[in-house]
Image (cartoon, rainbow, N blue to C red; front, side, top):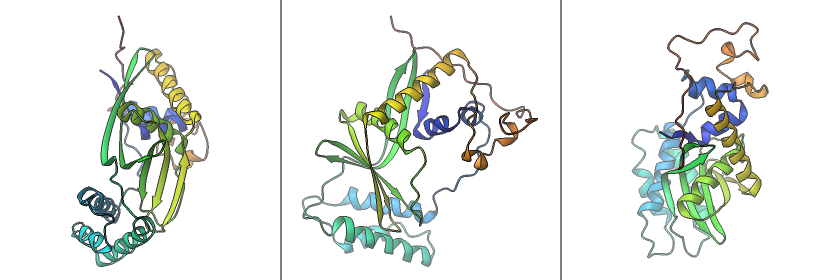
Length: 262
């Protein structure tokens, strides 16, 4: 049985292996994170419909097409959210659609992806999901839509780049070259170029994780600013002088099965 790994898991591990152990090995309830609102879900769904259902025999969709697709996903929104969402889609149309002579069909839209990786006789299943994936001249560009009002570059973006480099290269036989974060409500875009260092960083983290899983080594805590937002402080020996014992229903650390080649 392979060990399941996601970009979120790898980012958590890269930030603090002890937090990873609490959350994923012991299955302790994770701290509340600001999640997607109904408006966020509706915007993602509308953009997926815009690209999936467009007839690519025609050069560029119109703003009316955007309006039709948006109306399909507004039933659970308030009037204010409908107004804000439509304003965001208009900005998107003006910047990313209207100037184009021809819109190109994405390689993938709202797609779940999975690949395998064997490290130190442990098989990992790499799982992820992306908003949009485009062909570019020398490889692939990953598009991630953001619906927050403020533009805050996500932490550990280097780990995310390396993780998706590994998984997309195996699936599409093309190298990931760029990750673009499109902030829909502020009409801003951040683009990161993928380098060999990103690939190596993700590979090294997975190899280190494999050693801990295989040899049952200690998951050492790493302290920093992230500790202020951590929901596991009361269990952590690096933060609390007398940490509380884990709940009785906490799971034991996973025992992994080695993938031996003969």
